[in-house]
Length: 193
Image (cartoon, rainbow, N blue to C red; front, top):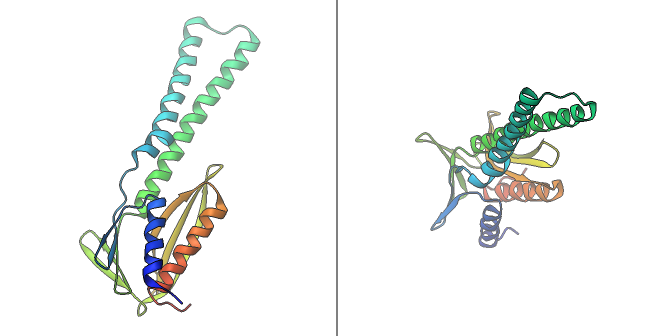
């Protein structure tokens, strides 16, 4: 049996845990558009970019001014150079991941009266049992340990719309939350499939 009040309270807790911006107004839950997460931007983009640039620039300047004649030092400089470019690549990958999450969560979503309303650029699209085919989830791997999961709906015309996009480091925890979100939306919108 789907106890709506308990499930909505748990839904709110999971939204908070995944740092998804939302607001509760009466019986409506408004999942707001994603804000820029400055902490993630600093950790996954600015720090690696800065450190990688400093390493590459430092090694380049040292080689230009002092030259490298000893083979062991050439190896160390080569490794430092490659490490600097790897950090710059990591920063670029982090920026792409942050941008993708923001893009996936660009629409404001309103849950009210067993309906999901998406608001994009002032236009509203309502989804309920009449025009929904199913709700699914997916996981994408970014880098070695960063996972991005999406819960999306598929309407009867075959269009897919992302409802929630979340990140995680352990696949079993992320998969569990994605399945929970998927089941929550199916029960809330009264889909039987």
